[in-house]
Length: 212
Image (cartoon, rainbow, N blue to C red; front, top):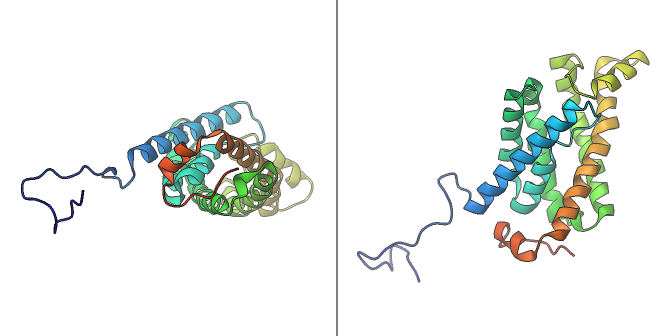
């Protein structure tokens, strides 16, 4: 039924919009909330256990694959803000990294990188190298290489080997970000494989590469 102004019958009810005032549909808002919770939970657990990984972008990557860049960027930044209030203030400064992860993950989905563990691993490797390069100056110049995470020991090891501060934080990023993003991408690829097509269509009704 055409409800455009030119065809609307006076006094007739208007069809409700599927989008909220935020510009996102209800399902996308739910996905953003889930992605934020996943980012924060996994990030906090890894930090508490001092594991030399992050795993705090799995929700962002999943959100980017299902709903695109903008929702994923919102999830990434919101997750960083919440993590900062929960005792990881350094996360605020790494928000740009989350935005870049959202953009690359959305592009990776369009290129069918999540169609198999092999292609997901290759995309994760590239994502990890880029994330390491972006985060290294933040870690070096804002925090002096110490962010109270499980990766601080790796920075100290590189420093002890004679590398400069920026070199050490970049090498630490390559050492941890690459496997971290490979694991994250493979996890998301597995989740996408198990999702029914009708669920994926709720988030990408007009453009969705086939997921075998």
